[in-house]
Length: 337
Image (cartoon, rainbow, N blue to C red):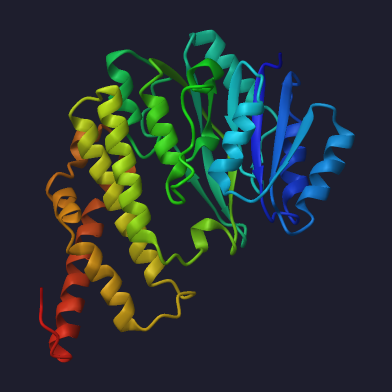
């Protein structure tokens, strides 16, 4: 049984796959298995997976019809046999000692999960470090929820390892959710871990590319955000999270409103201004949005630096957009709601 199962969903990443997987193959911790799930890639990704497997016996390749990243991760999870689970994206890179540092810290502290820092690397080579706000290296019991309910621990699964017996057979990625699937999965993991540790070093490099999901124009953001909200509320009830978890969920919802704004007004989005304003208008007039605004308390989330830093600016954006929508409708003699 390997110590860590590294699960990597693969889809249309022929340009970046070799570098990504080779960064895992070069880990100083060698007792690992690397599971590559080729999710029906139409490019050469599947062929590259098989060539990599020929070079390293620790690599297992799963070929499946395209079903999305959640489906691919679930397939990898079902095929895994390691004591710990680590999820990685197929176009990102990890430091050579990432897994060794994480497992060493987890073993020393006897914790269920171990987090580490990551940075975002753009194609123009500029970098923005993403550090965790809570610098306690070990958090247990009653402090666990409040510390984890922060955007600095929350989000991608790529900055942590988790004990396999906490996940395997108990937690799955929701294959119906295409936006925020990492967040929902991690949120449910929070309901099952009682402690975590933290390595205060950048160990993961998240590559921002022009074709990445972060830079893709979406037409279903509102529906997807609603599905994420409903999924998180369901998990909250399932694990009887504290009351402040709902404020956290609302903050996540507002975060996705911010992403909706960025996505809608992206230079790649060629829709008319009228259509763009209608998209924002339809989101802001939902009862869920209004409830999220009223019950969105960043101070309840501890040292969530990212939220504190941007929250007031986001409210300004909301008010400004509301003004633009109102002015536009008046100019076109459209009744205001």
